[in-house]
Image (tube, rainbow, N blue to C red):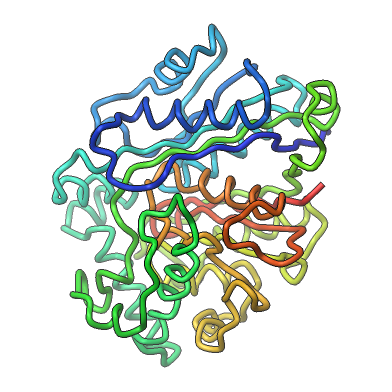
Length: 386
């Protein structure tokens, strides 16, 4: 099996892009990645996107974006795995290179969410839940995560203040990221005084509705040499894992275990030949603060029930033992759902190149974890500095 390295990365700022359409965002990020790699063509294109149909009435994204980017008659396809679409698209692109079927692959994640009314956006995002058993009965995505947060706090004795620390950390890091939607640090009091959106979830426990796109170029080390890409730009995709769990919360064996994340992480660790303790930074899927805690537990960073304890002890800061959300995470950088996994990837690449605006000291190995639904479809990818 061939190795795969990322040789180019690009992204747009995350925010409310009223003057740009979905295709504009995707092509901007894609061309930035190609320019970063110093290439003018690719063998194929994979597009990570969750919900372009309802939001902007546009499907067939592979053809749309390849056409507007001037990529010619290449294969191009959209990959959908709910909010984990970006992470899934990345892994499909890596598999294409590793298999030997393609030599140079582009992967772009994109989502345009702000053109819809807030009530419609809430409904569209709930499509990641179980339509018949959850959405039909009025359980929004926010409500489902609120149930998990309430149960987590009750089971392990945490407070809303404990979980608010994840948001504070994310905003502290996002403040240094020029591509982040929110560039201002916050205090615990900011989170606690924000309005409830589904008790105990407050506004500042949740990631925002926003637009954005991020992209990478993937190839083999041999092809990277042939293309003349400097080795200091290479970042190896060392390990990958993916798994699903029941789509409805009611069917879970354990409401407080992200089983799909645990399985995906085990597969990624095995492929990369590393353990959780070897990872220098973690970009976890903090769409809601409680998901950051559960993710750290599923990834083997914390014992079951002790994810929030790491935040309480200050262990998730940029200069601590387990840095997370190094450029703001979903909470501060923003969560354009289908693009999130690709933003995580680009951020990992920048960290491992030593080019991040909020640099983890001496980072050699990074991990990204992208969640679809309330833990029903999860990808974990591990990256290594070459």
